[in-house]
Image (tube, rainbow, N blue to C red; front, top):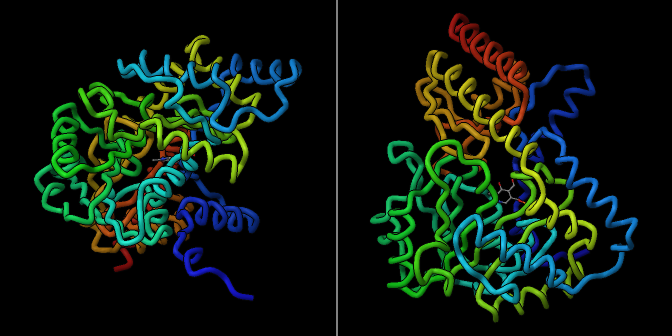
Length: 391
Ligand code: PLP
């Protein structure tokens, strides 16, 4: 059988492959501490689950309009006003089963083959994968530790060519936990204005900022006319398995995305849209407890990693990842990843799973209990001491 050329340009995600490997090892009786996963280990808040159950019982079990119900789109618009201070028209909102389909369809809708798209590197691998899929070229903008894993705007400017069509932002960032500041956003917007570029801003970690403020580029005056803003329920509300996200964008693109939805998955799930509305308007206690717990875990893992010889770790301001520097260990990211997984039973991800500028780093997710994080730190320290003793 023959397959299309384009399908082989899509890349699998490292975290899913490592999870499969961990499951194989666990089936053989090995003990693995999972620090590779990008999802909260908390249950969805009870009021949200109850709203979904009630929605099913009330008959929200049919197709909805392809871009989501008008009530759900209006709820997103209200939520964005409360959280970012921006006013958007519900007609510019598209509700989809997760942020991923918004990324996919927005890139399909704006980017032609041979165009260039500036992607954060290390960065979420889906961006480069989808840019390659449409036959365009991802251009990595390095996020450097010495700059707190933020953009260097002069470097960004130097990467723009006549073929550049889009800049992708992700703040707080996966994998570094880095957060862009208001002045970063203003400077990035200036570059986009100067060169007439789309800005795709993936704000999936917007609810997980521990120090400082979350800033959306949408709050820079004039930005929305060239911005595709996306966020979703997966991380902030511990709803990864529900599949619910949304995008806000100029009307014509929103209409194209609705047509994309009709041709692909028809519409987002009706009862999950009701659950999303409850998440936006219901009590936040369980979410607040989760965020506070993530902050504690971040402090435990950062302090613990910095006590281990050969490892240094910045304290990230957001998301639930740390991105420690392992260059002093004298091994590549992949070698350290293998050592930790196969000799210590600690699963992380090599920094290179997020692009070439991730070399010299490992990503750990702290979506795991403090006890497990402490045990992982003990195992990491021990395997490094043993390895040094053998050398
Ligand atoms: N964007 C980033 C930066 C992510 O890290 C993830 C999940 O890991 C997603 C998007 C996927 O979000 P969703 O579950 O809404 O598709």
